[in-house]
Length: 144
Image (cartoon, rainbow, N blue to C red; front, side):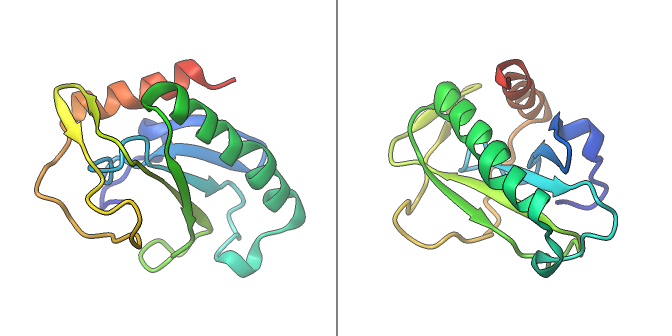
């Protein structure tokens, strides 16, 4: 997440153990990149995940994110990562890797290396706030 990140502003859906959020700082070039944030305050890292969180994440949250992402922007290869280097709280980065170009809001989203490893490299293009909110709202409207 970015500095001054407001999770409620970017929230897409609340689950029992997780909140799915649009990753406001990392949409380019990965349109539909989201974050699953553990709702339990003392969930600090991957070692603290419990059975209920793990099952809900893998059986409900990630599949719903993937289904909606495919509906909105086409087929992709899902990447899920846990870092915790900056935000010391249990959360998963859900990053779509696209093999085709996606054009949305006048922006061309093209994964520079969909077969390569993910990089948190900062790109020059900043997606406008209006477009970010539109992407968030599309997810909200399409979540079950």
